[in-house]
Image (cartoon, rainbow, N blue to C red; front, top):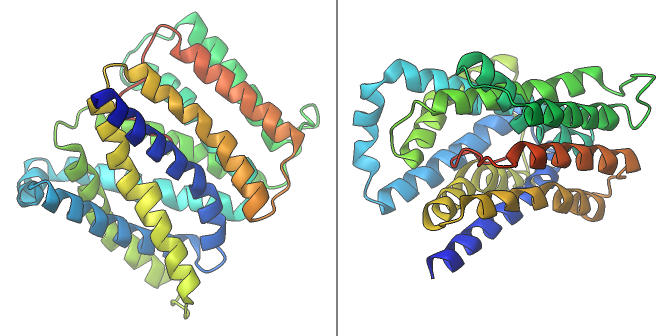
Length: 299
């Protein structure tokens, strides 16, 4: 029975994550990236606070923060503040069908950063995974014209790759976090909100946003940053086969491309599919005989 629930939670999380690239592009029609970060963070914080209250853990929030205030401040400034600001800006500059697969290479970036910061050994298959993954990145970014190395938006590509560094850095720091995962993520949103609100006010006023914009940003806050994380954690807690649940995430980018094509009409270049296949092959090679960190969702 637990395995059935685990599979249900895992599939629900993957299907929801598959929709966020489309939701990002729709939301960016109404908000700037920093405004989108503020609004989505508020929604996420409220959702996570509600979950923590339901679980009877909300009263532990202050004690958790005071046990390591500078640590949680650093985590919050990396994610959600810097990570989502950079990610949303990359989606503003690039077609979502390019930004999403580029961001998907974060797991390969994590391998390299773990070797530098955690002293983990890089195996031969990790180098092969990195080569395939970053070849896929180049194929997507150049739309298949690999030899020319010309990018439609060099800044957009750079930001998408920077987002993988920030996400990997967040999970490396998160390995030292012994707190309840819901409280840990909630604290990240709470400590980052003053910075994101301040930056949004500094960069310009908020114009009137129609209800469609608020609906879209609420969806992003709930299903990219908030509730879906809890679904994923529950799936990993309930299963006896972490690898099987973790492998569900490989479905996500392909579903995402189909949704982008059907809902917002983005053209999916053959080079995007080819590059994504290279990235996924690299990730599968990387997983061979090794399980991924249990708490690491994709974005």
